[in-house]
Image (cartoon, rainbow, N blue to C red):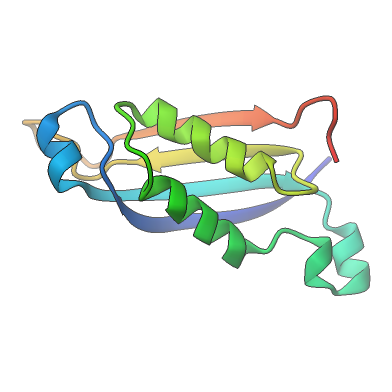
Length: 124
């Protein structure tokens, strides 16, 4: 059984979407990340080096959101999951990408894509 580290509601401006105006103007995206980790070592040592630095993780997530445009939220979510799984000690990552200003003609509360990816067989 894994422990979890969550980073929710992280906001960043990005240029993702299938329409030209989305690529030109950009819009806000909101990201939630839940990482499966084992926190026992960090709890015992009380050392940031033994856990996921969520400040650093936030910077890396924002870099993906504000970085290279993608047409689909699925692509953005996959890129984010790869960033999460690259962190030492992360066994699995659940990533949700919200697009609150999605170009939909009807009133809506949210559009989001959620994926879950697990570390490969060479897990660190």
